[in-house]
Image (cartoon, rainbow, N blue to C red):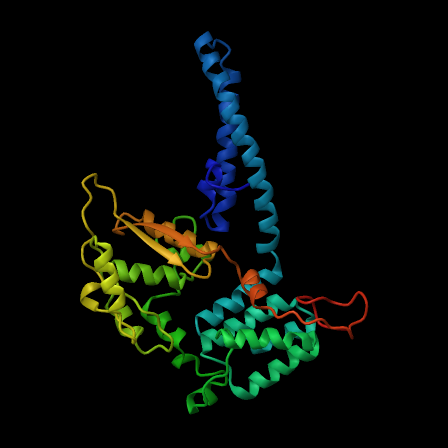
Length: 362
């Protein structure tokens, strides 16, 4: 299994895919040079031979691990280098940047028979970044999905609506003029500007910002941690109070007793509580010079991109904490939607027809 016991995996797991090939090539070259150097040394002493023999098990283990990671990288590259992946990435990036809605692409994907989980992910992303979908278009897209994929998706759409991943935009003049739910007035647009979620000049090979994990988008959770734990959190305090459903945020950097923590939690008011003056106090000093630990706990699940971004944040010399990530689960987009899917047995479907999550009916 791939875990931190594999030193090579620990080195590669947080890299951008563009850096992965070069890093694997460098490791393969180092192993090859180690063997070649020993072969060229015809006058090696007994001690040198003994030392190399002791290194052989370790080199062999690294070589086996390298072969595994090269095979994984090749499979990943077949996906990331494909035209479909690139087009989808550009469409999602345009959504995150607030450039243009993806309604035409969504309709094309329905007509082309895109697998339902992939289609629903894009539909939910459109709804989230735009603050909802204009009612007339929402009804149209909902009807298209049900006609193409079957009535059994009615329960899944209902679940997505219940948790807020899919919603109608509030009826406003701005929303109607923009034709997609008022993207500039959406909560995500406010957060995108306040927290600099989209970064243009990202170098995935020598990253300077957590946005490198997706080649330009910094996970929102990482930006929240960064804003709460470092100076410059006033923008966060200004951005969050106006957002519907905003979380309770408190930052307490100093050591507290259990009684003090209990009193602090019980005193959290109903509205969002962010005190700009308390967002960036100096962290408590450690006698050994090590960074104090900040635990980021995700209830419901965390993605691997978020973990990689938080690890990058933790490694930054100017970030005052060592971040430890804890979560109830590690999730991905497909797994998240599967958990919200509503199983309905379609006894009218033909034998061998598409199951839940498949393409549209024929």
